[in-house]
Image 1 (spheres, rainbow, N blue to C red):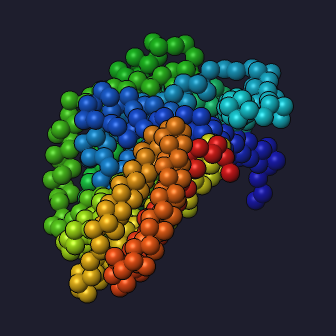
Image 2: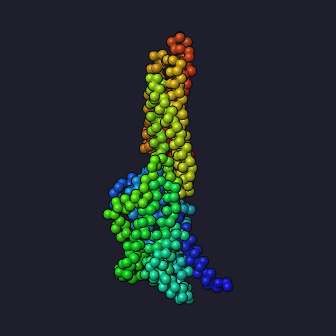
Image 3: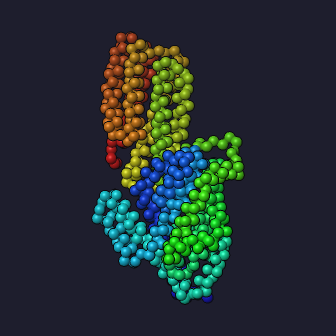
Length: 541
């Protein structure tokens, strides 16, 4: 039997409104990420063992991502890569429970249609007339907020006939929802499907605005939504490191135990919520907020107990190395975090190549074969890091980065190539040292002094360029460029002096190729330092 048109309209309004709401949330998340993602990423990276600081970071991060699931998935990535400890992730996780309540508070206010249409109009037309990226992003935030309220209106309009024309449905949802376990399971199912507790809670709020649902079943649904969002994190932890699995388990325990703690006092809790506001929609939002805040505060003194319990349930694996993979794809849920971690790995790799320059110098000029061997070992590490970093950067979604970060992402790929080439060039010189030692070929005293001089200048130039990249200091980058010009001049002068020495018989002919090739390798290191400096100086490509 075909459904009546009104029934189709109800279903389409509810599902369409929910879909529009989730799109608006996604758009808002991406825009907020472009505006403040890098700042939040740096704060997230510097999280300490302090529960209060961790909760603050988690709240801010979840507000930006508009999803506690994305925050927790990112935490799993951090723990999996060894950047954050399991205990630190639990602290941030507690804050994420609070951050996810902000959206529900926002949409619970009754907004007149002319207001959200005004927001949509302003947000749509501002980017058309202002080309400044900050103004455009602000316009998108306004547009997203307008869409949120429009989506709430669609869901509210879709739910309203259920209260007036289909009283049996209203009675059904309230009768079954009033049974806490049933309501919780329904809420968990909806959140599990949508993977958004914000969307689920907002749908419940819309139903409350339409008079379809009472407070008690609404609270049960909202509590269940907290549990439903843990499904994705548990799935993501499969195959991850032991600490990452513990992070997913801790998230599930916090949400499930939080609900279980409130079950015996659901009646008094509902009475408390009634006293917070006369409007049902506001009561539902307040219930969501108070529940999450109280659960987080309850677990603050219990973090140590929770950590030890998870460690006992999921014991350490023998021989498992944490942070072995440098990156974890779960970080990609927050592109700004992913970009920052890629930058940090590039800086670490650059510092290794700085060490390789010193080692190759020691190997070549002092015939230290241990230093030569160490350069060859580090070359493998540099190659592995460069390949992993390039692959990771390629996965970062450009469309979720602002213009500045998009340009920086492109520059990092270029810088990565330069760093890898520097590693190759130091390896060449380490191999020269081995061959010279085996063939018992020595440089003349003057040639040795000349090589020491250009090694000093090249090392200074490269270190200056790396420091410019690390600090994004254009003055240091310009200094590196000037030093590279000095390298070019010195390399030409040393070649000419070498030719004169060979002609006079001062230098052994068999040393000629090694000397000239060493100069060429050092000059090319200078070129790569200059490339890095140019990437820092240039505003765009």
